[in-house]
Length: 211
Image (tube, rainbow, N blue to C red; front, side, top):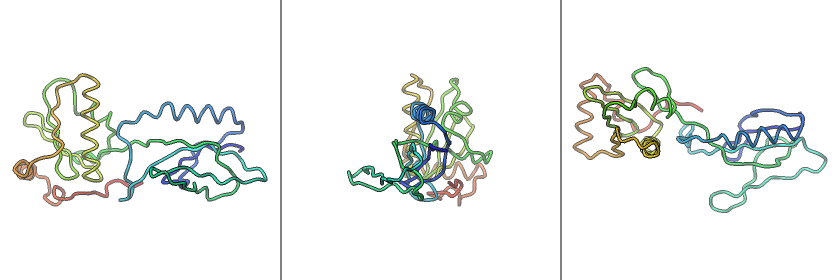
C-alpha cells in the first residue's frame, strides 16, 4: 500500500488505522476522521501515565527520507517516531480517543453519551458528586457508583457533564465537583451502608482500564 493512516501516542506510532493505494482516497479518509472527531471526554491517561494522540497521513517512502518534527506544547521540535524508514509523514493532526467510565454495579464501561442516556434522563432531579476517583449519582433514594482512572479524570468527567447540560439548556442535574470533609464522611458512610467495599471507596486511582 502507498498510503497509511496511522494513530500516534505521545509521538510514537501506536497502530495503523487504514491503508490506501491512492493519495486522494487517503486524504479524503484522513480529513473525514479529523472533521468527525467531536469527542467531549477524551482519553488523557493510559496505563497510569499521561498521554495524547495524533493521526498522521503517511506516504510510501521514495529514495529521500525526510524526518518529521512537530512542536510540543512548549514549542520544542520533537521527532515523530515511525519505527520504519519505509514511509514518510505527509501531515499529522491532534486526535481524541474516547475515555470510558466504569460502572461498578454492572462492571461495564460506558462512554459519556451512554452514561447520559442510561442514567441521566430528563425527568427528576439528579445529584452528581466526586469522591476521590469515583463519581456518585444520587436520585431520590437510588444511589450508583462509577470509577475513573484518577481524581483528575473524575473532575474532567463532571466538568464535561456540566458543559454538556449547559449547552442543552438542561437544569435537572446538580454537579458537585469536589466535596467538603463532612460531605465526604457522609458519602463514605452512605456508600458503606449500601454494601460498597471500603477499600474501593478510599482508592484514588484504578487499574480497571488498560490501553
